[in-house]
Length: 92
Image (cartoon, rainbow, N blue to C red; front, side, top):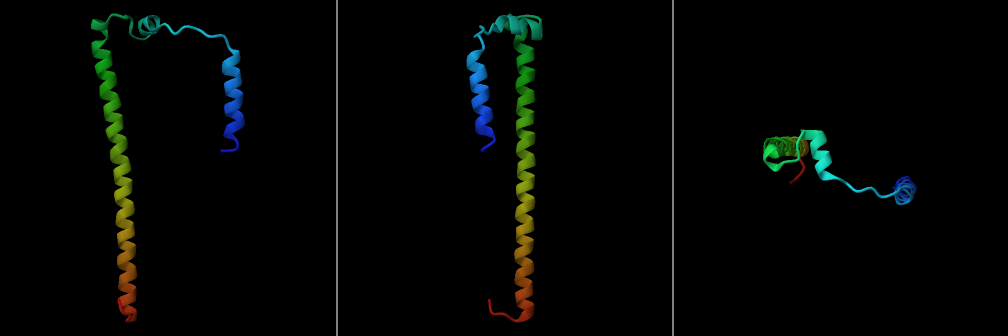
């Protein structure tokens, strides 16, 4: 965190010193998709939305699998501890 603060201050100073430029959405859409007309952009936006949804759910599945694996490992550790205590004759 200490290393991030000087970097953030430097980036803020450089950003404020740079001249402001207008962001032209129509020009960007024409460069990326070849058109800025909404009727021509329906399919690319749908594909983009589908890709984002797939990536979101794929990431959620990965996180869920990791969490499930940790829960299984914790449960196995608890069972092993319980089994060890039973073998030694400790009261539970």
